[in-house]
Image 1 (cartoon, rainbow over the protein chains, first blue to last red):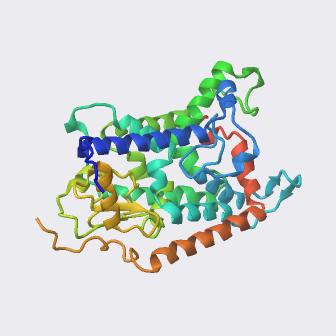
Image 2 (cartoon, rainbow over the protein chains, first blue to last red; image 1 turned 135 degrees about the horizontal axis):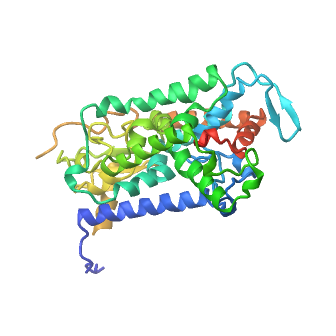
Length: 339
Length: 62
C-alpha cells in the first residue's frame, strides 16, 4: 500500500509549546466560567444560595464570588473545622434543627473530596482547573523585559515550604483549636478578595439595594475598613509579583496546592521520562516555570502538570497520563502529532 | 550526548508495577468512603450553611 507523504510543514518546538499553552488556558477559562456562571450575583451584588453550593470545586474558587456555583474546598475545610468551636452547633436546613458538634470535628466530606481528586490527578488541578491560577497565568503574560522575569532567587526554595505552614497553621490549627474563624480566608486569601470581596463591594455599590444594609447579603465599598486594606495589600503584592514571577501564590502561599502536592507522587495521573530517549539536554528544565527538573523528579511536589516540559522536549521523552501508556508509546504518539 | 544515567524512576519508586495503580486506588476508595460518610453525617449541611451565607470578613470586607 502506498503511503502519501504529508505536505504539512513540521511544527517547531515553540509552536507546539504555544499550542499546548493555548489549549490549557482555554480549558482553565471554560472551567472558570462554568463554575462562576451565576450571572444574577454580578447584577445584584450578592451570592448564589442554592443546593449546588454543597459541592466543592477542585480549585481555589472563593464561594463568596457573586458568580460561584460551588464551594471552595479550603473555605469549606475551615468552616467544618470551625464547627467544633461553636458551642451551640450548627443549623441543619433539612431537619430544621441545630446539631451539636463533637468537640473537634474531622472534615470527612471535604478531606474525602480532596483525597479523591488528589489521588486521581494531583496538582493537575492547579495547572488546568484553578481560576486563580488562570489569573496569575494571564498576568505573567504581561510583557516586560526578559531580564525582569525572575526564574529563581535566593530563598526561593525555602519559601516553597511556606504554603505548608499556611496550610497547617491558618487552615487547620487555628480554625480547629483556637476560635471559630476561617483564618486563611479572613487574613490571607487573595483569591477571596479578588473574585469575592471586590466584585461584591463593586456590584453591591452599583446595583444592590444599599438601603437594606449589613446582614442582608448586599454590601458596598462603604463597609471597607482595615481588613480590606490588609487583604488588598496582600492581593496587590501577589498580583504585581505575578508579572515577574510565575504563579507566586501557587509556589509560596496556596494551601490547596500544598494538599494536592502530597498526592503528586502517587496519583493516577503522572509524568514519566523515557530514559532511552532523554539526552539530558535540559530543554524541559529550562521550559519549566515552576522550577522543576523533571528528569530528576518526574512527579515533584511543585509540578502543576501544565505540560510545558512535555511540549518542550525535542526527543519526546516525556509522557503524562492516567493509564498504562509507557513513555515509549507516548513519544511515538507525540512524534506522529508533530509530523 | 548519550544518556547514561537512569533518572526516570528516581523520584518515584511507584512508577512501575502493581503499586502504581493500587496506591491511588486505595486512597481514592478511602476518600470516597470519607466523602459518603461526611454526606450522611450531615457535614454537607455545614458546608452549605457556610457557603450560602455571605461572610464579609472572609472576603476582606471590614
